[in-house]
Image (tube, rainbow, N blue to C red; front, side):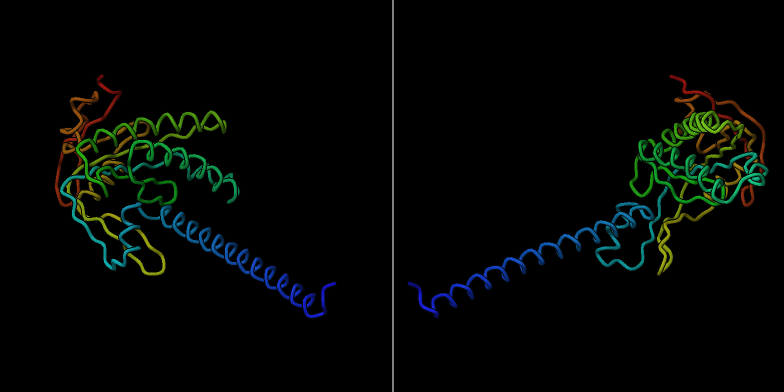
Amino acid sequence: QATHDQLWSKQLENVQKQFYKNAINFAFDQEKLVKEKVNKIEELMLNVLPRKIAARLETGEKTISDSCPNATILFSDIVGFTVMSFSKTAEELVYLLNDLFSKFDQRALALGLEKIKTIGDAYMVVGGLPTKDEDHAIRVTKMALGMYDDLSEFNKQHDMNLDMRIGINSGPVVAGVIGHSKFSYDLWGNTVNVASRMESTSIPGQIQVSPSTYEQIKNHFEAKERELIECKGIGLIMTYFVGKPAY
């Protein structure tokens, strides 16, 4: 028969094994929680910043500012949204904008473009940043044409009749991250101003592009001269309306 000391020793050994097992399980659970939190933070970062920019911040880079000799910027604005908003609740407006802009986001992702921001019912996207490529003007124009398809689908789904203006311009820009507690990846330069002007002087249902964009896409899409438009800091420039792809 086992002695009292042997029984006590066995009991102590079982307690130690259980304690060790509980400690291991706790460690694994904590590691899992940490990984989930890290993944969540990375996911949130990538919702705000391009992947390459987020990676640079994670390595400790404090100031991020890059010059790009040629990028293509698109601005869009929903026509009739302000009037329509008077008949909607705040929740309904957010739901509608989220539905439409989510369609735009998916299209931009598929085309390898970078969404910069939304301001109210305006949407801004860029091609050629932060990863440089030669076809950014073509892909941004495809984005613009696809956005009208998305808007048409949106109108059918919600029984609405909204329209849109789109403007595109290509040229040199400065891109960087601003902010400390709330990061923002943004663009600066006259190229951005002209792109905004292309949108504001366009007409509903049209894609208006500048001469610099036209030169890069003219062999890929149908385009026709519109008229001379006054652009601050530049003067009068000829603009073009883009139609369907030429191939």
